[in-house]
Length: 414
Ligand SMILES: Cc1ncc(COP(=O)(O)O)c(C=O)c1O
Image (cartoon, rainbow, N blue to C red; front, side, top):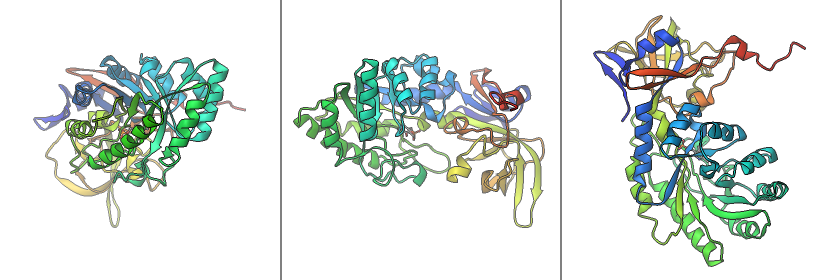
């Protein structure tokens, strides 16, 4: 459930009409509902109340400081994949002891930064990374806490670009290589084995792949224990899907029940790294129609947001529902909603039923809170858009729109 609803034909975010915000901040902009964010965090975190666990928000899905702080204030930690995300997490007040660090290409500088901040776990993805971390930790006079990220070779049944737990994916360590690497890790001077991690993909709409992965990892943990390697936490990653169109993803409660049913005999706490399920339907992208155009075979709505603002449709052919902000019942036409960018791949919707809107009208691109702003770029020298948070009957800008001066910051006229 989210707090983007129509009242008397106009779209509201909580108690605030979307149009009012557009008039004050201009378009395009990302708009988040704080009540929805908090509700989603609670729904997920409380679903695991009976199990010792930590919910580490996947910063990559939406990395605005205000959103990180909101989850941190609710007890959440962070799942990061770069030094930049670590910087954000710390700035938002997330203690190092609640931060897990995933990713296949951590550099020595990033490792040092994370060691200085005493993070909870390095989720190590290869033998070379393990040895590099041992060396860097030695130089820093620290023992690095490590979980190896296991690749359980489970098909998450999702888009190829966001499946991560298959043998052919670059992520994690194959199950058959992992025992040897754990033994090596246990023997390294500057490494402390703390856990096992596993993330099989994103936008999963069934629980069965999660259960299949958990069963495999649980057996693996039991084998490690028999060999004298004790695992203190199991990080099950993120990946729970949301409804963009007509998907029927499991509720966090159903996901938690399915996980809980598999836990007997497992004597470790759990870590989760949810991203999309917390923020996806808590945010929209508001854009204005600039022109309409009728080609020989298609109709186009040309809007002021492009693939640099929301990459998902171009990148994954992802679907986002598009609604008229000022007229819920506007008749729909089949059209492409395209941006101003000089790329044929610049579209927010293709051959989709969209409101029959004309110049100056406002459109809401729904379910844009996850992998929206955080994937935005300055392509075509377009300043990145503002981010706005509504809380009840008020709103605040949580990231100002970039200026033209921002575009050339750091550049030299050489
Ligand atoms: C290691 C890791 N953890 C967590 C996530 C978050 O996934 P989601 O947003 O689907 O919950 C991702 C996303 O790709 C990831 O790579």
